[in-house]
Image (tube, rainbow, N blue to C red):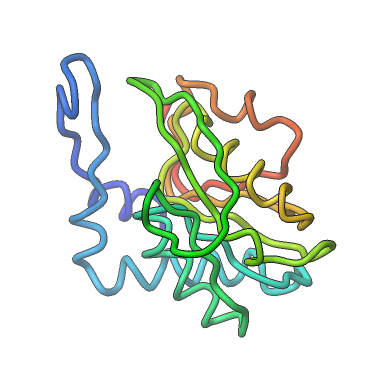
Length: 173
């Protein structure tokens, strides 16, 4: 399965900055069978995990997180960029491989003790995923796992997230 999915991921050099090789998943998203394979993998991976919610990280984490939540019969909680959430929220700043960012979650999005999986499209340095995990923990909930379509192994995000269980469908070294 992984090779046919990798064939649908386009390499875009020097985006968004010179020296960055961007892994563009939009061709994969445009292929209904491939998109179904990804959601099927996620659902199979987490169907017996006794989860309470699925967290999707803006924006591509929404693409996989929402259908996973529906498939598992769970609620979906968005982790968003600044200025998108209207109610009281927790805020976490983090480092990217080419800058910094900020993520937010509603303070009442989760309850203490709930178990969640955090879903995003790509693991690079781990900064975004770590920020999302910290936000979940600020609500009192527990991160059961972090799930990614793509892991860029050379950037060692897995090392940064060593305290969490991590699943990635496709790996690039």
